Amino acid sequence: MPERTIYREIPANSAVWGVAILLGAFVAAALASVVYVEHHGHIVTGMSNQIVWGLPHVFAIFLIVAASGALNGASIASVFGHAPYKPIARLSAVLAMSLLIGGLAVLVLDLGRPDRILVAMTTYNFTSIFAWNIYLYTGFLIVVAVYLYVQMSRQPYIRVRIAGTVAFLWRLALTTGTGSIFGWLAARPAYDAAIMAPLFIAMSFSFGLAVFILVMNALFRLSGRRIGNMLMRRLSHLLALFAGAVLYFTAVQHLTALYATEHGGFERFILLQGGHLTWAFWLVQVVLGGLLPIALIYIPRVGASRREPVIASVLVILGGFAQVYVIVIGGQAYPLQMLPGFEIASAFGDGAIGSYSPSLPELMLGLGGIAIALLAVGFAAKVLRILPTNLLDANVPGNR
Image (tube, rainbow, N blue to C red; front, side, top):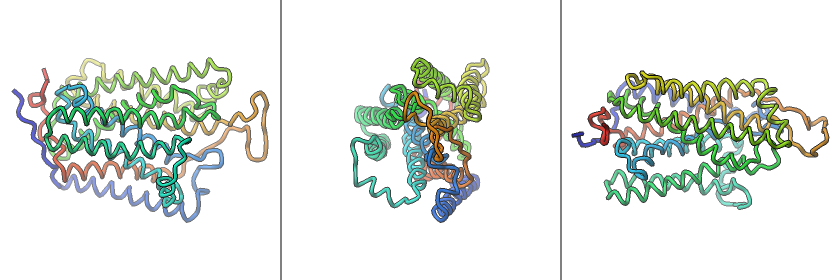
């Protein structure tokens, strides 16, 4: 019989303080980057009139998408009733909110005028998907916070399941809204596809679970707690399934675009002629971020070691960043088709492939968003009882 699951705060030992100071340094560097760009203008970044969403947006979109997927453990436990995932449901909910906060912080600080966010929050144009996302993001934080409260106050299971179901449906809506930002941009041949919404949902499942595996392992190691192999095996097999789903929807996306004549130019650009974007797609996104993690997880010795799931999670995250980079930067670099059937050339670079080189302030701002998310989840683990004291195989309910 497994023991009763006990949740305790993580201790404030030297290792925890060391990580907190390191993350705080990244946040400080991000704030310094914001001040530097604010003073000199966006001319000091790699962005231009053609590529207006740079590396900070890549980080922000990755974090927002991963926030939805970080809720995997809680959703599987509450909505689908799988007992082995119940001990990690609280951490799953906290990580989901933390990642979203980190992603939104990057978006706000990259505006150049962060105070203008008040305009976006008080003036709505409901013909724009961006206005919808204001409600989706804030609603997600509220819904998941209520879900976490219901879990921690030990409410009857039916209430936990109702709250979990609402959070599960909201996360699907949130990721659909994020994917629709691209899918509804008919002017750009890189986007303009209904497949973007389910692709982003699959991406969220994969990226969020990979981040969750790494954060859970880090918190347990910092607090001197242990995780059993069976739970890691369940999570890693689920990660392989989601990584395969991302590859599938990516293949459908590009095969569909290749079938449509108007998207043929962009597909040649990304798949064959895009330089570093093509390398990022094939080598980092497909091979390192998709095929290799699946192979690592399904080799026979995965049940005897936790290195494979951790390495696979790192590879999935690297592939995820590459995928978002290719979508965001590659989609903007390819020129707009303003007059189909005609070539356009001007002094403003119309009809030309755009170039983009990320700057150090952009990188530090993006890393600062990650640091904010990790600091938030670490602070929550220090002041709230969200982390089980024991996840060894014998103490996880439902293990066989």
